[in-house]
Image (cartoon, rainbow, N blue to C red; front, side, top):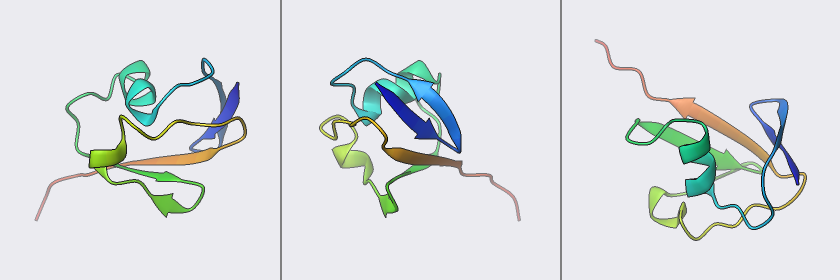
Length: 66
């Protein structure tokens, strides 16, 4: 299936979850926030949130500083 990730098309296997996407993008352990179709998905739901074709996702990286 094809999704949109940060404005770019990306092909994923059917039934992929947000956790699968995070692993595929080599973002495990990073401080990120994920929005799916305009809604923030809490970290506690990443493993259970199954993606669908044409979902639009945005991944934002937390950047430290002061």
